[in-house]
Length: 257
Image (cartoon, rainbow, N blue to C red; front, side, top):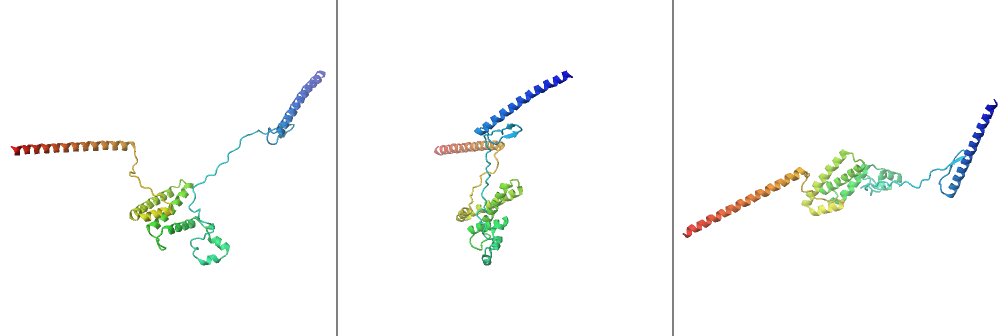
């Protein structure tokens, strides 16, 4: 029994020494962390866990701010929200109503279709021949231009919309044919329409066929054959001319004799 008590006392003394050393280590580390945070080496408040102070990690970098993607300007951007809809613009009674009714009839609460209709009317007014002109080539080009630009803005956001892309290409082909005919018939009107609507007319390419290796080889072979045939024809003409000159020489010698 006495030996057991002596053994327990020895174990407790060794454990007390370990505890005293660990507490001294903890106090030294906490004092060092407090001095570093006071001198500005560590940023942010220290997190204390019992008697041990844990400092947050130091990070000397910052995230780069993401730039917002700015797409092309919409053709409807110049339409002011205070403008009236096309159906109520010519009504004089609208001007004498209160602000709430004007707001309901203005473009602020209008749909996209109503704004597009107003833009079409603005483009038509730039190129039409007179006030009652609604079917001329210039008016058709203006309507197609507003429609094409609307399709382009839609495809910028929804690039997988194949149906609207097909409609846009059909409208572009239709406008190209109208501008081609207008350029051949009335060139001054063609220039005025392109200037007023902001259209850049490009001439179509000479060949629509895609240049593949097989096509290039075939074209080179056809050119060689053409040159060989032309050379043979030239030699035949030279032989015919030489034959005719020999016959004429013999005829002239026979006449002299």
